[in-house]
Length: 385
Image (tube, rainbow, N blue to C red; front, side, top):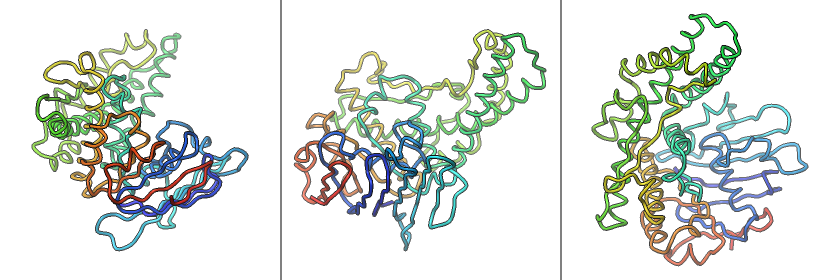
């Protein structure tokens, strides 16, 4: 996969801009708050259909304007022609997504059209942060590889929201029939089983790549391990190889769906008292250990950053082996957060891949590279440096 060109109109602080990327390393440099990360935000938008900053689409529209527009020209490996992906976000009404000029029904159709791996300073908290951050990491990575995962996650989230409302209704004395509870339990079990199986299989293979990256960084002195922990852990068989991940995800064990269903039925009274669903894949996590100890408790700051870096590189490796092509790597101001050794390792590990880097210090990004395309970003304008 290669990002060839992106154009913007009224996107964030960018009134109008066009950037053509080289197939190798591209550096976007400039002072803070000039628009560097906005460009990466626009590129990454086409990999998941929303901002990586977690903000509503309307906030992507330039102040005072009625709409924002972004168009990415990319080419998948082996394709003879480019693909144009376009998003038009009006201040009122629904956004419009197209691929090759043809309208898409929504984000579910867009996801998978463009594959990218984003690494930002926020990802350095993957190890020490909350379970929600690690679930989000898994969901974003897996969604680009399995279109069905997006549907399952959307269905699960919608059903969970409705069931939580029903629990609060019951807590206030409302009457809910056994049939209503069963419908929600069955729906959560069905979509949850697929989500759990995909997360378990992906985490198992990711752990192998993290161990490989970490061994290279530490010359084999330390051994990390990632373990999926959640309702599906006891019912998921580890995949034998990367190719086996699809099979494990697509065919979760029947006992897994039954376990989710049974748990929802058994916990119902406690959940009514709590006013929320206490059982299910929305409480999953990844346990990360280093030399057999919990990394969240015992890893140093340097070890924590190395683990996060290895997880993002592992995400890229799995995107390549499971998706059939190399993703585009987007590095958002991570050089200021990594020491010289980890910067050098990151650039070396990315090798000949397409990389788009933002940096306030261009010399930092360029010191180890012989051929780069450099763009200066200033007040929402972009020019080749």
